[in-house]
Length: 185
Image 1 (cartoon, rainbow, N blue to C red):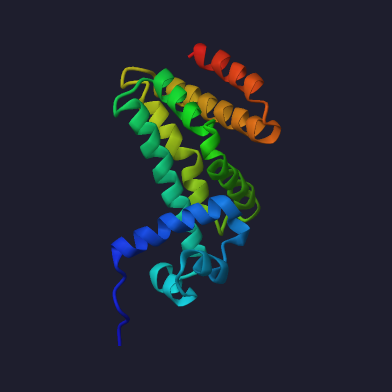
Image 2: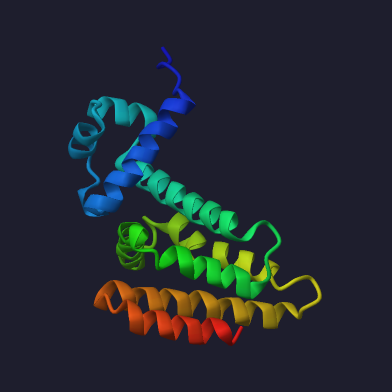
């Protein structure tokens, strides 16, 4: 006997709420009972919509990634050049309203490096997805190896600056460093 089908709209609503919960509480608190209580549903409802805790976490991370790309695209449009893409990525990443999302991102990143089998999908996308966007932003006429090096430098620098900002809270110093870097693009 087959179970009832998953309602995609309800799953999307629960997923968005789970992302907010995870950003506020961290991924280590992403367990059935607390999440279900916070979302006003039963643990069985979450199992029905997501399967396992690991699948819920993967869905949360995937939705967070979608949000990051969509927000950056809103700032740049679909055909932005490398400096525009990099500035938009930094603007969104350094937005104080997004701090919880990026603390979650870095917490998962650290855990993923400790358990790469469990977080293979996250690790596959953590760098590659941004590299693809930043390489494409450089246009078709640039040497692919050069485009990849530049994109790597942008991703690594923005993430390093963001870690510094989240760690120290020194927005003035970190923003000045970010501007100096972005001006060189």
